[in-house]
Length: 77
Image (cartoon, rainbow, N blue to C red; front, side):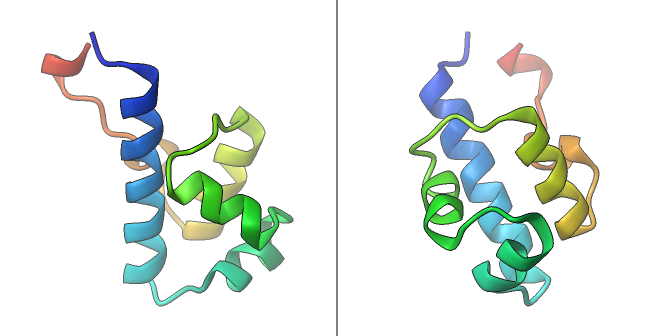
């Protein structure tokens, strides 16, 4: 079974990767979501649990489906 800290790390890495691939800065995401830059940094580093509402706002701001922030493979279930 996958551990909580692994989930947070993978989600954070995916959020950062997608944000950078789209040419967005943390400030762009802060403006679009209301999530502060320091808080976004902590999320991207996998150091905090994230509320579902913030996760939805991030997916919308990044223009992706929420499951792309954490794709779960069959081996991880």
